[in-house]
Structure formats: C-alpha cells, structure tokens
Amino acid sequence: MGIFRGLTRRKFMRGAAAGAGALAGSRLALGGRPARAQGFDPSILAPPNGRFNNVELSYFQDSNWLHAPLWLSPHFQEAAGVSISSREMYEGGDTVAKVLPQLLSRRPRFDFVQFPSLFFGAFAETGRLEPLDAYFDEYADAQEYLDWVMPAYGEFYTKWNGQRFGIMLDGDIHILHYRKQYFNDPELQRKFSQRFQRELEVPRTWPHFLECTQFFTEELSANGVYGTSMVVNPPNFGWGFWMDVAASKGVNYFEGENMTPGINSAGAVEALDMFKEIIAFGPPGSESMDLAQTIQRWQSGADVMSIWWIDMAEFTVQQQGLELAEDQGAAIVPGWEQADGSILHRAISLWCRTGAIPASLPEETKRAAFHFLYRMSHPSISNEIVADEYCGSDPFGASHYTDAAATLYTQPNPQRGTDNDLWSTNAGIFSTFERARDHLDGGLANVEVGYPQFYWEGTPEYADALGRNISKAVAGELTSQQALDEAAEEWTQIVQRLGIDSQRSQYQNFLDGARALGYQI
Image 1: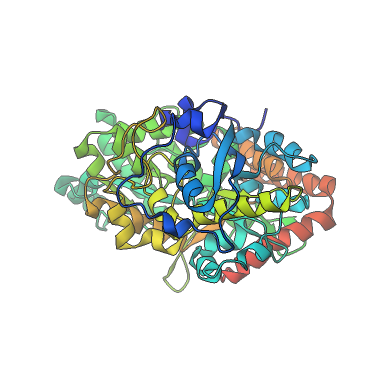
Image 2: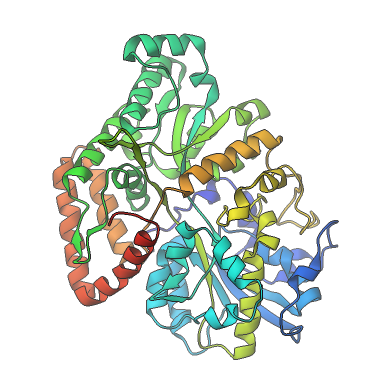
C-alpha cells in the first residue's frame, strides 16, 4: 500500500471521478463525440509540422485529476489528428507502484502519464522520461509558454539536471481560507480589541493566527464553531501543513548541500511548538484531524479559518448554500515577523501534477503525446481547464490569475458539453466575478511565496518519517525536539541507504530552483 493511498482531497468533494472507473476508453466514457461547444476555436490545436496521421494515445492519471483529456480528445482529433483511445486511473498513493514499472518496461501501457509532482524527480532520475527541449523547439510559441509557467512550478516540477522532462498540468498551493462574517462582526471586533489591544483582522503572522484561533474558539465553541482545524493525520500529509509554519521560520529540508537534515533546528522546534498550540485550541479530536474531517468542517461552517489547498473554495461553493459559500475569503498563509518588521511568508506547493512521456516509445507517438500535453497545458486551452470543476487542475500559469481568468470561473467551459455521465453541469464555479477575483487573489499571493515540496528519490520515506513523528509530538508522545530529532535521524538513514552522492546530486535540483527564486538556502 502506498503511504499516500487515499489521501488526495478531491475524492472527498468530487464524486464525478468515481464514475470514471479504473479503465475507461475515451469514446466509451464520452458516449461518442460531443458536439463542439459554442465559442471553442480548434485552430489553436494545429501541429507545427502538419496534422498527425490519426494517432491514438493511451495515458495514466491519478483518479482525482478528472476528465480534461477526454473532453479535449474530439477537438484534438479534428484539428491535430491525435486523440485519446484509453486511460487508466490509479490512486495517488499508488503512483510509484503503478507508474514506475511502466516507465522501466520496454513498452509502457501509456503514451503519456500524469502524476503528482512530488514524484517528478524520482521518475526523472530513472533516465526513462523523454527530454522535451527538442520538442519545445518545434513550436514557435514555446518560449512564450515557458516564460508563462510560474517559476514556483516550472523551476521545480518540470526541470531536472538542466533539462525539461515535464509539462505542468496542475499548480497546487496552500492558502488561508477564512469566514468573513466573524472577522466583520462588530461585537467580536470589540471583544478582540479589548482583550488583545489590537484590531481583529485576518492574521498575517503565526502568533496572530494563534490569537485568532484561541479567541474564536473561546467565543464561539459553545455554538459548535472553532478557530481552525489543522491537518495532522494521515501523517504523510500533516508534515506539509507544519511546513507552512516551519518554512516561513527559515527551516529547510536539509542544510546547504551536505544533506544534513534541517528539520530539527531551533526554528523547526519553535514552528512545531506553534503548530501544537494552534491545534490545542481546535475542536475535539483535533490532535488526529484528517483531510476529510477538515473539509467537512469547513463545508458545514464549523471553522472560522482553514489552511488548505486553493481549490477548497471552488468545490465548497458547489456543496454549500450561496450565502455560506460567498462568506469565504482567501488570504496569504501567515508568516513570521523579521527583525526589520517585514513578514516572511512561505506557502507549500504540496502535490501538484506533472505530465511526462516515456523515452522508449516510437518517435511519432512521442511527438503526438507531446503535442497533446503541450497544447492542453498551454494557456489557450488551460485558461478554461483550471476554471472547470470537472478537471482538477489549479492555476499554474500567469494568465490563470488575470481578471479575464476570473471571469471564466463564472461561465460554462466552451470546450465541453454536458451529455455524459462524467460531467453533468457546465455553468461555472462562482456566481460573481468578485468572488472569483478574491479566490485568485488569495492564490496568487501564496504562489508568489510558494515553497516546494521534496520531490526526489526517497520522497515517500521522507514524508512518512517526518509526518509520523510530527503526529507523535502533537499527540504528546514526544516533545517537539524529540520528535524532530527522531525524524532527522530517520532522514539521515534514508540518505545513507539511498547513497549520499546520489541524494546530494538530486537535491541540487531543489537548491537550483530555490536559488533561482531568490530563496536564501
């Protein structure tokens, strides 16, 4: 069983994925070719070297990414001569078990694969992913596209040892969600100001976040409302929510280039102490809160604040009544105040999704697969995709955060219709431009301070060791220092087992990307 099995959050919200089954041919799943939706322009899909000779592609995807390749398939076939013949879906926690054997085989069952980006480096390190730079060179708009992909994603989840092996398909980021009604309540404002000698406002630092959590819990818990719920379990993801606190304290996975763990530093311990204090003011069971519980609490209006992925706002709109949905606000994840009075924010880009192509395929198949991935990722297509509730992609390119993009969240997607069991609606996500704009503003603020997940060989082991020991600290089984020392010792053993030279070389990709973004590492 993969350590991330069953942990992806969209499965709790989007029932459409379940109807797709483990293996679905595109024509079967779609019930035939859907009529082209009004406004879709297929001319943007034309290949630079002429139409392909009706190449049919198979692909793998994790089961929560949903259906964009399927609804695009008829349009790509008409304009480019390339389409989807079948897809195979797997649980995100089974990524390595399902994808790696195919990459290592002579003839993989997929022509392209989509996978969570935290496995990108491990797959690239095998040498079995096709380098993509030569394919990009064939497209006149490629450099513009590469500049358009946000560096917080492109620097980490598409490049390896100076070459491009991946194409971004989904840009996950943590943000601070909050309920406006409580921050705008005059009586709560008066009480908070009287108690803390400061105005009640959306917190920008972790100490202020703790104050707000404590205040709201003590004022509202009698009514079943608490300050916040933090994800702790399953522990393989809880580490990522702690990392929002720790990275903004200056904590890095390893210190410098020598692979000495940095996760048990003084700053890391202070961050874990803060994490534990916040959780202590949570609802009953907060010490073992999981993904499903946190989203269910948010949807029911039981929490005032939530650190979660950006897409929670999207799919909770579909679940809540209009009044409760419109009460959602989005802001930057809190940080720590610096000596000069500035605030250092870090929001982790946890999960994300990359598309890649096996190196062992015939050249024409690789060219067709590249075309499909590239054009699907390109803003001319993905502007609509990220604003569609039946895709599963979040913004990863510059135009995804514009006013024009916000408008797309209020409209039907012209790329698809509603004539099959996989997607039953096509009316937009948000009811107003203002709500969509607020949603994107919150995401953009966090992408600009995005901190990458680890994504090289050993990722499952690193995640398990760190998350498991953080859970022990939250449960009171270990002190913060003891828990992080235990995790650091396990990390050292992982490095030694996998080979320090190999790990140092792979970690260099993280350092190169971080330094390109101006991080002091």
